[in-house]
Image (cartoon, rainbow, N blue to C red; front, side, top):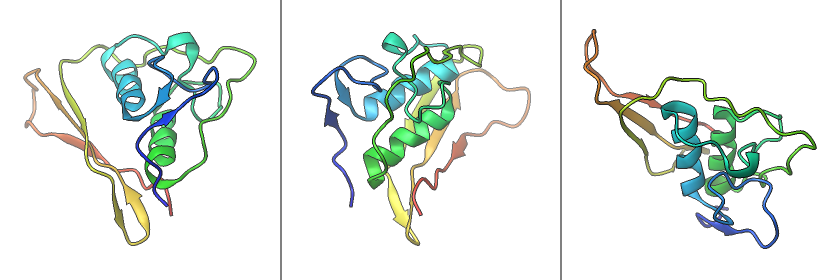
Length: 134
């Protein structure tokens, strides 16, 4: 079963990085911008989707799994604030999530990042796939 691509949060959300009271792909892009390009941190520390007390790339994949393949809802915030330190220097470029597709019973969401900076080595786009559901 594929859930719609957004879920409205009736009460105070535990996972809503951009603070708009809707869990949708915009929250995924918000976390990507925060973690990889030095964007603003999650509103109220609400970026910990999987409840491990850290805001990191695993939260992006947890949210993708929830929105696109019927995975479990993001978990409630832990009593202590999650760690929210960006792990990378700011980049300039573009990040795109491709269309989720099912292959051999698994869901894949392409993530493509291109940078504006002139690399010192052969130029190429980076992509990653998530097999969030089996």
